[in-house]
Amino acid sequence: MKRLIAPNSGPAEALHRAVMWTQARRLAGRSHPRAALLSAALQATALGRMTAEERSAISRVEGRRTEIPFELATALGEDPHTANDPFASRLAHAWETCRWVSIPPYWGRFLFRLVRELRPRTSLELGTGFGLSALYQARALELDGDRPLTTLDFHYAAEIGERGFAASGLDERVELVFGDIDDTLPGVLERIGEVDYALLDAEHSTAATVRHFDAVLPSLAPGAIAVFDDITSTPEMREAWRLVIARERVTLAVPLRRFGVVAV
Amino acid sequence: MPLAAALRKLEPPPDSALVAAAYRPLILAALPALARGEGAPPRSLAAVRTALWTTALGRVPAEERAYADLIETHRARLAERDDSGRAVRWMSLPPILVTILMRIVRELGPRSCLELGTGFGLSTAHQAAALELNGAGRLMSLDIEGMVELAEPGLDDLGLGERVELVGGLIEETLPGACEDAAPVEYVLLDADHREESTLAQLEVILPAVAPGAVIVVDDVNWEDGQMPRVWRAIAAHERVAASTQLYRLGIAIVDEGAEPVR
Image 1: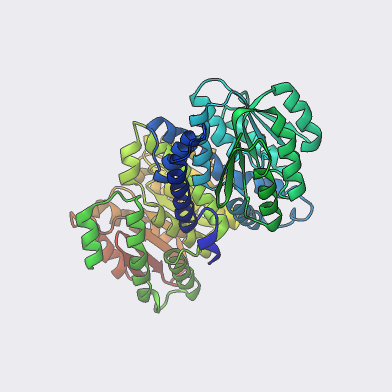
Image 2 (image 1 turned 90 degrees about the vertical axis):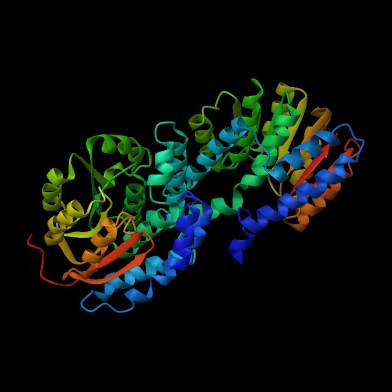
């Protein structure tokens, strides 16, 4: 059962692609200026439509995904709690962890598609984690010019993310700002100015999610899109999503079961 | 076996999901032959049995999946290359079969392994990864000079270079020395030139160097020209082979407790 409901399992992917398809159809009839773009991104992801160039970009991200458990297992070797475990059990733990916390491939392809459709001048990510979602977005940006992505995190996992950006040759494009997001976010927003695209995937509490969104909201350019991860994972996150979509500037809200997309 | 016959007629690429799905029942069907093996060490029998059913039912431990994912990425990169793409898809062992090899090495825990036919180094990598996870053991892999040179950088990239000793050259010339170095060998994969005469000659060189209860895996035992099926029948009937089973293209034999190896 656990294997069937794991985010990267076949049944979970089928369910979420069906959700994407349904919402794409629903959005097609909306008159919101961003509805058509979102609908196209959702439909292409649901149907798995990709050009050869995009497929190659995605496969490079998927290649990076397979390296992360090894780097995490090495990092666990330096952790006093797990330092004495044999490598095999640290690797098993790391693999299981990545399976549950890393963005599943089909959601990664959605972010990739969305960034390709939107072509944001400035992109912001709160919560780097192991840097996989940043890679999907950066690969999409790479296909459309030289636009950057700024990603913020305080967690030790972001060091693994940073190694991934360097190994993928994307360290020029992706800027990792390491530190408490509440401290680093105002400076980052001041520096990058208007934000066209944001992914909010940091601390999963009502207070932090709403606080981060309220901080980013004044900087969001007209027509900007913000994506939230795990909007239904806990009661706290469900509450955060309700508060986010009630904000006055939010004119379009698309819940996708796990992800939520809003446009201003 | 109707399923195997249907599979052959259809000829889907060996690395496709269809092949993996079709293999699962074939793997389970190979189990009863290993239920009892007169003179085969129970430890080796149990290791192979466990390896087979865990693979068939998808109960592969997480740490092995981590390595399998990493090596499959390597396979995908090789398959994208113009010079090796087609060959990798059709010649290399498919993912589910290399999983069986990895599982056998994991369950058996051999100190010394021998592989004839490195190829692109994918089966080499899976077996070496199993040794790495076991925390002990070495694998000696033999192939012609060019093939070994092709496989070496990949194994180094995967961090498995230390577990593998690649020996380049004609196998007839390198095998006696390799057996001397690797004895007593506890695990063998025969996947070299697929000719009757040379394969049986290789076996006669290897057998004196194997440890009691060693596992010998032979690839492509169903090759249609008739040479490999004859080879496999000869191996299965060999006086030193105590138990054997065949799953479509893979033959697995377990050597008896027998006399100690000469070295």
